[in-house]
Amino acid sequence: MKKRLLTVLAVLAIALAVLWFQRGNLVLAAVQVMTDQRYDEIAPNRAIPWEVSGGSVTPETENRPPNIILIVADDLGYNDISTFGGGVTEGFKTPGIDRLAEEGVVFSQAYSGASTCAPSRAMLMTGRYPTRTGFEFTPTPAGMARAVSTVASTVETSSTPPSYYDADVESAHPSYEEKGLLTGELTIAEVLRDSDYYTAHIGKWHLGRENGMGPNAQGFDDSLLMTSGLYLPEDHPDVVNAKLDFDPIDRFLWAAMRYAASFNTTSGDVFEPGGYLTDYWTDESIKVIRNNKDRPFFLYLAHWGPHTPLQATRADYEAVGDIRPHRKRVYAAMIRAVDRSVSRILDTLEEEGIADNTMVVFTSDNGGAGYLGLPGVNQPFRGWKITMFEGGIRVPLFMKWPAKLAAGTVVETPTAHIDVMPTIAAATGAVIPETVAIDGVPLLELAKGQGDSEWTRDTLFWQNGHYQVVRHNDWKLQVNERRTDGKKVWLFDLATDPTEQVNLATTRLDVVAQLERLLKEHNADSVGPLYAPAMDSAILVDKTVDQPFVDGDEYVYTPN
Image 1 (cartoon, rainbow, N blue to C red):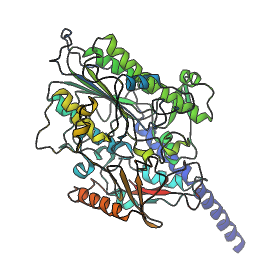
Image 2: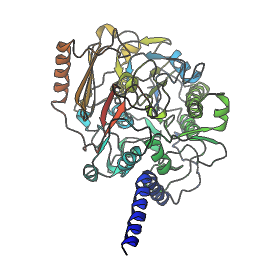
Image 3: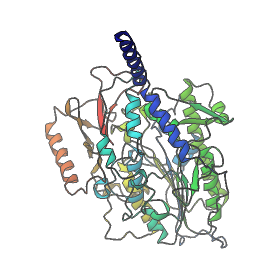
Image 4: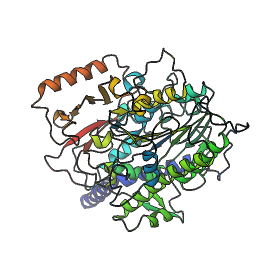
């Protein structure tokens, strides 16, 4: 009997050990099942009934307000485009994006609103800091934080300082669909719609879906929404996939995402997109432009590319050449698709005769991601998405408006996503109510080369819970509460050290004190975050996720 009991206990111990080592795969399997249930009825692709203005073409005149097209890439690295560097790999070119930069205005020190996507998008839409909106963290679906935390603990290269997850905090969160920009916030789409613009959104939203948070409720007449995030079905004959086994986020996305879209609804009535996601959204954007060329329109084209999961068309994969490793070649092919999108949009404006009086703005929601395992995406800057080193928040910001802005203009004044909303309003003559406090500043005078001497803003802020950053003139201070060894402070003089190599925090205590006072003042009247963060993740500054942590490596803790 004793021997039998010992045998049973041994078998049970082995089973528990297997379950422990397989816990990541078991969690992902559960996510896969839940996702299959959620998307069990994805309808075939359908034609999108975009509004058609129905009038005759109005001649381009100075009295007609400009059309506005805002194109936002997702996780585009500073060095991914040839405007700023060698592209994702040496010799890689992005002629469409380069053309937009050459024919318009380049803001050479432009910043995203945050180091992750959703808060940046909120600032693009509202021109307001999270201290006013409370929109401070990136919404994640229920269970994602737990799943990513569990999977991360099973990844062999995961020797980074530990991340923290609090299930009780997450259980108190609103649903994913209700984690968004509150309906009382004023978006640029609402401002323009009230000024008789037709407003259309295509692509990613990530600012909530229910309780007045969806695109249609926030000012868009029509919205073709990214309901899930595969660019093509995983087994599609024309797709080339690259899975990142070392990245917990990527593993979750493959389990949780499907090939799906919706139109003018944020739940139900889901259908298949009409091709590779980047190209499909561009096709539909061109229809919006042609349908509404004879009246002022605002098109917000929010691309998913080149965000993971890494999927490219076979044609793009072949076109970029023999780039290695495989994931880098797929990534380059995805950027090629985003670049082609910009080219096609510009060509369509020319073909329809409305290019001169159309303002096209291009940016990215944040810098390139370290979880790609591609070290060069943000060169020459340090850091990645999810950090607020320059690599995480320096982004392209290009603006083309031939009727008003001279080609080849370069603006070196620091600018940010909070400036986009008031800039568009100023360009169109739309009125922002005086009761709405806007943190951004219109950029038109700078873009015209006339406003630098009159520019008065010296300070920009970023915040992500306990991770607080301020740039004042050329000084940049980062303050981070690191759970493993307490508070960490970095101070850089960007005038002499733009790539943040020399930390002056211990030698310029006077500047640290000055900038910490600015942070305190900035947060004095904060409304606070809409909900508490459930995770606090350790992110390496100088290494990608696939590289092992060693003592002395710089890292930050980023809450979400």
